[in-house]
Structures are given as structure tokens and as C-alpha cells.
Image (cartoon, rainbow, N blue to C red; front, side, top):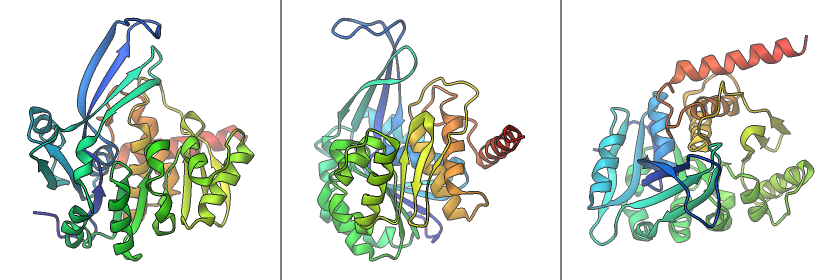
Length: 320
């Protein structure tokens, strides 16, 4: 059953099988590279939902997978008491989506390879079919794995009832949310996606500020531009400010950090936590890059709060 609580966060978008191929030595393009390969369930919305569940937030995923072994393994691995999977459909014609990340010797993304054809089945009719279920949630998270027409159908139907958070995923897919920017409460683009959505080139910090302001002028309530190790730039219409990243003890793998950031932010908003929601996101991301897993095993409310408070103490010490 789809969870009945109004506090359940509806996560609408992609469930994907993630494969990480990490080179063992220095990466050499155009030739064979020795790698280690790991496979796990992923997808932006799926990862966000899993992080939210670990933070103690009731969560429901609305997506689609195939009738294949990848789907069985993914759903078995994702299943947890705080996470409702009954909104995940099965395709009879297409395989479960997959994403292969090729990481260099430092754990940084070199290239990502996506097979996402199955999400074409998440069409406007599907959007209509989940309308009553997601209407019970006060908070929605969408990713741009959804077709543009589906995103528009969902957000136009919302009419401001739920708070809507959107991750545009990539430059190419960001175009899918452009027609409905005025229906989005909080948007999480990276710098390249912000450039694509604003029409402004982003080469400097000033460019970034202008791009975020332009996206807000197009209707988004709050723009949070993710900047990796440099933190985020937040523009909520009252003030624009750069917020530094919360340092990790070590960086093992950056995959999943952006999803953790979104989850931490959404959790803080939904739970009414103290401290700026962006700090919850940055702390969750900090914990995530310390592990090779896309979802940090140690992630929970207490570990994130501890990381926030340690960073604030350090900041205060640095000022002395």
C-alpha cells in the first residue's frame, strides 16, 4: 500500500542500476584500462529516497523497472521499513534502466553512460494514474528522468499544494523542466545546468550569481546551485550567498554526494529541523563522499547533525 501519512515524501523519477567502473591506475583515454566494477541500485530519485529513509523520513517511490534480474536485485536492496515501493511499476517490454559511471583514479567522474529508454513509459497517463497517491504528500521530489510532458502534467496539476523539489540531473535533461520553472519551489542545478536553464554563460562567481537570479526570475522559489567541493550557492530571493562545503575526513568516491545533498535539504525542511537546510544537505554529502557506496552506511539524523555541529564549531574556532 502507498503510505497514507501526509508527511511521506513522494519521490517521482528514476530507479536505475548503477555500475561504477573505477580505474586502478592512471586513466588512459582511447585504450583499455584495468578497472574494478561494482553494481548497486541507484537513480537520482531512488538515491534521494533511500537517504531520506535513513534519516528517518517516510518516503514513497513512484517509478518503473523491468521484469528482469536487475529489477529484482535493485528492489530487494532498496527495500527498507521507511520506504514504500508499491508505486514502482513493471515494464513488460523494456529492461531496467542502467547508468555506468567511469571514475578516474581519484574517484572523480570521467564519463557517465545512461540507458534510460524505459522512462518513456512514465508518460502523462501514468502521471494521472499516480495523482491521487502523491496528492497525500506535502513534499514532492522529481528528477528529470521523467519525460517533459509528464513533468508538466504533474506540476500543473499540483497547483501549489505540495512543496516541489526538482533535480534537473544533466544539461540535456534540464530542458525538460524549463517550461515549468514557475511551478518549482526549490531547484538543485549544478553550474552547467544553471547556465543552460538561465541562458547565461557561467565562467565566474558573478556569472553564477546572475544565472541563479535569472532562474528565480523565471519563477523558481529557491535556487541551490551545487558546486561540489566548493559547496553551494543559494538564492532564495531575500539574499544570495555562497555556503562552503563541510569537509570530509577523506574523499573515497563522489558518486551520490549530490543526491545526499538534496535529501539532507529536503529532510530538514520536511522535519522542521534547526539549522539552515543547506547545512543538512552539505553534511549528508560530506558523509557520503567518505565511502565508496552511493548511500553512506553511517548516514542517519544523528551523524548528519553531529557533522553540522562539528563544522560550526570549527568555523567559530577559525574566526578566533
